[in-house]
Image (cartoon, rainbow, N blue to C red):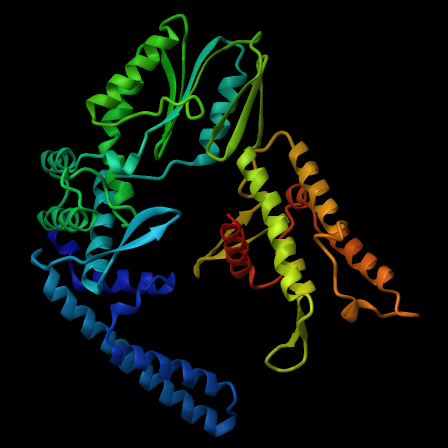
Length: 470
């Protein structure tokens, strides 16, 4: 990459992008700059209450203050730029917990900027593009449906990130000579700090959580991919991160020999493929084959006599059921409370919160990325399903949960209304409304979208409820 890539304008773009994504760390600017940011927020809030001349005067004040704020940020970024441009500035990492695995995050503003620079240069120089999960799944399903006999091998790389030897990776980067000297220098610094924090004397593994680690893992595994594709008889091979699947011609190679070749290739690169029965699928498939099931990229593939169906994985189904229970338990804790919004106009009570959560769980929504909307949810995360029987089962589970007084019982003091205080009738109407409006099969087939503007917040609430239940 050209040396001018490391310039102040690129630094400013990276910081602006991080801010727009809401990922800016508290340590990235000085306390004075953070105070200015809060003042701007207060002025904007005050601006909403002003009219006429007062509003125009405050608007001019806000514009001037905002200009000072932007100039202050540019000054601080320029100071960081001068520190890191020679490649000699130390990097800072800190340990964080991520899904029961130890991960690492940058510890200061210079390290954040440098890590982003390195990640961008790696992706640009090596032309790395993320694989399309849906295309892989669809292509695999079509090939499985082909009546030709085939060998299926499904496995993954054990402790993927922790297995990559740093010296071999650095040597490859040096021999390729695609990256700038500054980037390679900072990569060594990041590895040194990671090894120090992790007590990693063997100097093996990549730091989880850093922006350049996925790209580095892809570079290291390029040789693995090329070698597996060269195995005699292999006509389909895909790897998504550490998940591997391949199909081979049984007339050209035996299944045992194919599996042996894969293990030899992984060992030559200091990697280890899983050999546990629950992690590996080795099968010879043809039109007379019995049922073979395996999970790949979020789907359960069910092959039976030349026909392949795509289902939800058992883990996903279990998670949906458990989340339903979590939502109802959370409602039981707040069922007796009602609060008003800031204007004191609308009631926000437990039943509305519960219904919003069920709507988000059974439907779809937009993830606001500031520039565009990314659709996600039940359909958009599982759009290639061919067997919808599990959705019927989930709807039945939701119905049973709602109709079970032990799991869903609205308080009598809030719902004992109507003629003669008919509690049973009021609760019956609530249950009917929930079950008629929300459902997994409806959300999938009709691609129902969440109707409120707090979709991302509700998704986080559902995630927190689920993980707390584990």
